[in-house]
Image (cartoon, rainbow, N blue to C red; front, side, top):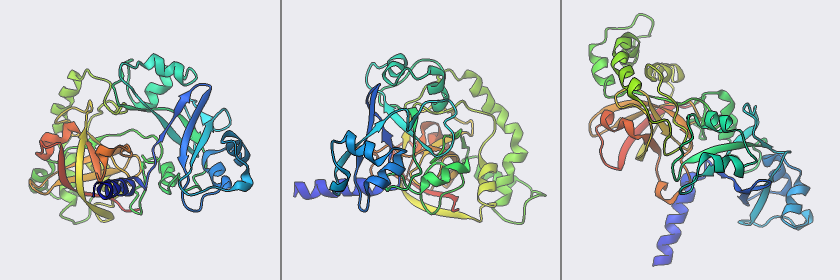
Length: 356
């Protein structure tokens, strides 16, 4: 019985992250590498395309001959070297981020040394924070691996990354993080319902009930001022995920309207959600999310069906592949708790975002 239960949990976790594999770098410079689990239909050549390396180099690193073929489920070591590993500030297109998971008492300087003395300025910019503090279990981008994503390891979501508003996979991918690093942010939702009722019809939007509340933020530019005040008090610059950016003024509702054609082109999703710690200011109207299928930069409307409250969150990245995250459809910055009226660590929610 116990074995069956464990198998069920593992299968469920695998399904929840099948759409997006987070690449965790291993080893220390100059011997850095990734571990890839062979999937159905993969060959030495598909791995070579996926990781920007010669298939012969990958086979040699694993002390194998190419004529041996690959068996399903086999662990293959993918070397990271000057041919496929990029640590320049502007990595360009056709690359995918690789992450380092911060361990206890680890410093940014130690990470800098471990990964070939990657410039600290680059690490801060890639992860959208300043200073030298990092927190245990944070995931930090330490470079990018080349590859055209033809292997199963790199899902189709990566293709949507160039959309600059993307972040991760699914047929509902909005143009935006999976997968290219893009600034992230979120929008206030609790304010939206009242806004919809009191806001007069906007001149430039087409007749639609959802349009009025959506335009409200435009007219409510003044309400952003009180939200700006908390920003002045903002002191923490690092987060538990290591990549929540500074809070700019305004919310994300207008971007959501643009991405979804004023709420017409959306895909819905229902399921459990959770939180991650961030430096987002409570009440600022800027919220962030981790999502496995919406590309980086996608604005997701998150609704608490129990209270009817909604917020707009910008996708930063995919949900880390951890047992605690199994079956989650979204993780939100904890600043959105008051806006949604939720205090529980896990909650049920409804999502809506661009279905392109």
